[in-house]
Amino acid sequence: MGVLDADPVSLYPRAMTTSPSRASRARLGGQVSQGWDAGAIELILFDLDDTLCDYGGARELRLRTAFGTALATISLGDRPPPSLDDLIAASIAIQPHGAEHFPDLLGRYGVSATAAAEAVRWYRTNPFHGLELFPDAVTTLETLRSQAPDRPIGLVTNGPAETQRAKIALLELGSLLDFAVVSGEFGVDKPDPAIFAEALRLGGATAASTLFVGDSPVHDIAGAKAAGMRVIWMNRTGAAWALGDPGPDATVGSLTETVGDDPNNCAWL
Image 1 (tube, rainbow, N blue to C red):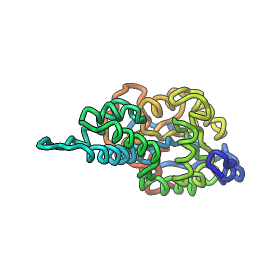
Image 2: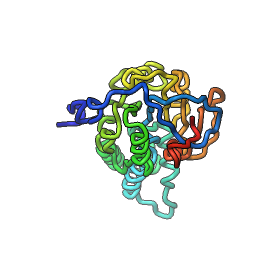
Image 3: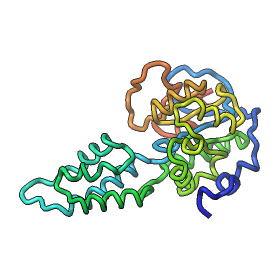
């Protein structure tokens, strides 16, 4: 049975056994970067790519593998080899998630159409090569679950349904989540308020009692804030916030900062 054919119980074992509890009063820990309005968190939502799993790192590895193999087919003579780092950066700037541009890009360096086509083929047939959860993902989700077993934990992710559901299965996230909202299934992407509203419906919570954790300033932070949620910006790179107000309610550099060291004495609430 494929991922898309699986029933909700097989993908999310808790989904049919645990109902959302509006009485949940678990607390979160971490370092607050802006003022935090005290109150109960009844639903926690996460983004997937570059929040729970290292999509960016896996994409770079896939591009490095595909481009490195293609460049190995050319004769350099006395020329220095092209910079893979520059080639990867150029590729992402042209098209962050696709491979249609590979022939034109690689052709600039003398790669043949045949070798470029092979790079495209390999890239597309190995979509999850190197994809892993961040080391702090499972521990964080398990800690949040242990702090409040009845509080639902959900996922809101952009991308094609088949791709994102396959990632969830590959990364074995089903047992750690109560539900996932995938834009390719729902019909709109983050930051559209409708996809956040669907997550609230599935989690049985209000926006004011929901915490969203994500990495994208536009799709995650601005989108969830516009939907009325409290928001943590997962900022692993230490980037400066550049979108103005309203910014995130808090900023963390790792997922473990969202739970803190002492669940009974936390800084969030």
